Image 1 (cartoon, rainbow, N blue to C red):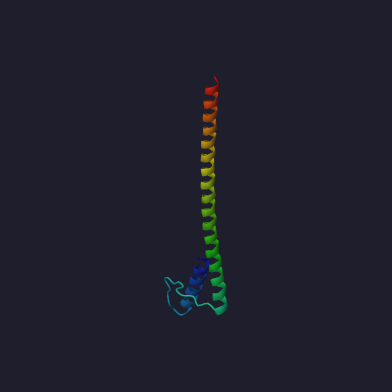
Image 2: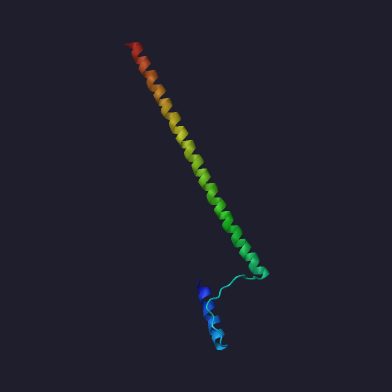
Length: 94
């Protein structure tokens, strides 16, 4: 955005010297050198890897949470069975 403002101001100044009025201008295509392309590609690859890593971590967290919930349910059922067994034993003794 700052580049657009600076670019527009500079173009407007130079055009005014030639007697031309510039109402609007912008940058459409930018041609980068080979080295800059490589750097930009590396940045894009790093960003995509970071995004994929975040997705993987979220999936792992969801999976762990699901396993924890399953373990809690199984523990609750086991506790309920133990209570029932103790009640049955207690009823048999009396």
